[in-house]
Length: 81
Image 1 (cartoon, rainbow, N blue to C red):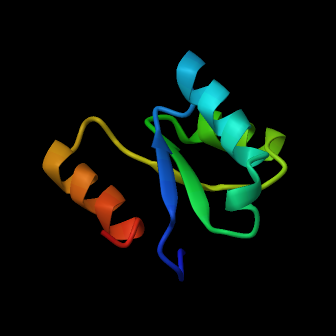
Image 2 (image 1 turned 180 degrees about the vertical axis):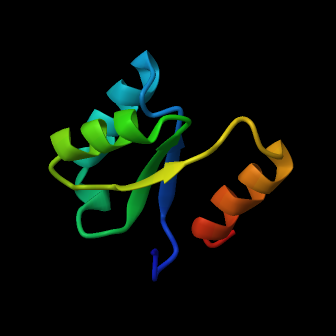
């Protein structure tokens, strides 16, 4: 359970471009010590990517079978927006 708002969420983090972005952000000095997350549709892929990243971002799994508006609202809620 997240206790603080996230400063950044990378949605689609397990795709080609998402992995590049997540790897870059994991080493970015301005994000060190700040809460951020990777998000996507498959929890197992997100967990695997998070384990590879030294910053250990949170993982947020968005189920495409559900209501897309509530998924977007949920991501916005976690980011403090």
